[in-house]
Length: 434
Image (cartoon, rainbow, N blue to C red):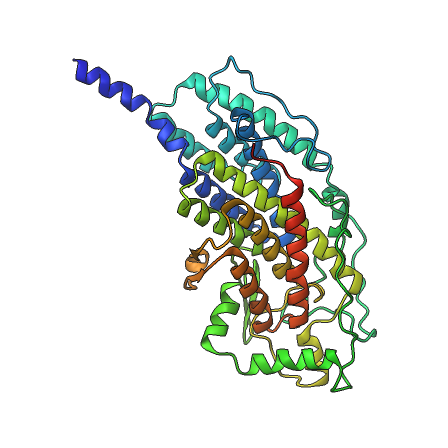
């Protein structure tokens, strides 16, 4: 009889093993990543989705482990004090963290209840493993209070106001100015993103790059002409390795495929979604516990969020034309880049900026020379790539956009530097671990 009682008690603690497993957090992030991908959110909106959810999850953990982690309230622009937990209640902070991630993740995506089925499955498994009803109730109550505070804060970031902002004006008669590109010829994406409230940056223009090379496609000695020809020449002679690099970092959330009169779309994770996956891979390799993993997700997400605001400020300041448009008009009407050109101006590069910013945040969390194998793209049929460090990955991304034929290499170099500045600023400003 004693053995039966002991076994029964052991069974009742299994829910903690399940709920406190870092892999469950990573799975939850992947679930939101899938919802975001399904909704065709462009990369900067995707970054917003991940960041508010990650901050909410982190805040639930910071409240429960206040001896190790510090709240971001008072550190992020506009985020004031958040609700404190009732210490008399049997809150499971890891469960509360998961619930806040799901609740806030749903609030910044659609349709309503997009993660409800996933939440139900998590709770059902936890109940089967012995989750007591009083702990579930207390954790849900605390999660709801944190979620409500984060959602109220998120609604004041100017996102809703920019939904009805003035549309981008295409000026096709202005040499060197961006115009829509094939095959979709889509309108410029999020021209008012610079108006979104940053997380840590004082303003969208805190870090500004030098101007891009002056548009000059007639002088073969000009920097601009040479940059354009470098893109064309590289695109005309890509090696298999270079094609793999370009494909691996493509991260086009909505690629339009055209075959004769047939058109169909294919989806992948966007650039910030790719980095969400990398965070999970790093947490697993480093054997991080649940709390430390929420820290890694939150810090890196914030760096990504602010990187997009900085980059979009630059994009719609200079409104530069894409290589594909220039080459088709002045050099070769039939030329196509290896990757599909995104629907926004060329300078600076969003993927290079956000990747470099993420690399700085991740380096501050896991250390430099943290080698890893990135398996993010396997589910899209693209083989893995391995890196010696996060910064090494960001540099490869720099080349990927050039190989893909969608950016001048000068833009990628400058963008990597800008992202490093944004990420470094976030790292220096935020005090998260005690």
